[in-house]
Length: 195
Image 1 (tube, rainbow, N blue to C red):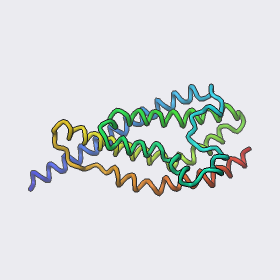
Image 2 (cartoon, rainbow, N blue to C red):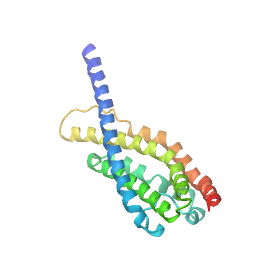
Image 3 (tube, rainbow, N blue to C red):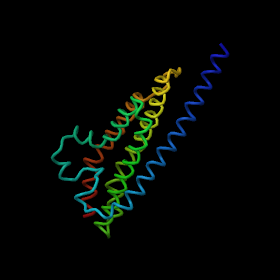
């Protein structure tokens, strides 16, 4: 009994340590994407940018469900990657692309609107990011842990099912819905005040 308890405590510590390591890897990948996006984003016109937000005309014509899927597309991909061994390689790449998309869009907005660009970028990207980024990293870390467990299982090693990928995703759904609502209702109003 004591040996089993010690083994569970050791596994819990290993799980937490791995989560911190994966978080650092995802943050580094995200930062590299942000750096690349900020360097290259000002060279693109607003029409050719890798948008991470919907245009006001798209918001008026698109349905709520479509906007929700657009808003949470990176989260859904992270969830999908976390269910396979490919998440070990592809989740840092996804984090880099997410950073690039946000930073490139911000740099493009700032370069197109020199006077109000910084405030517009903060409104258009910053408000949704308050809801989106924490959820993205939580789901990505759990996806990494799940992919690691699958990798160990495929190699024939025993790995207890301790990941919480689906439960963390379900916890994040209300936050993603709130971010979608902010993108539909709040951001167009704030942008109209700035223009």
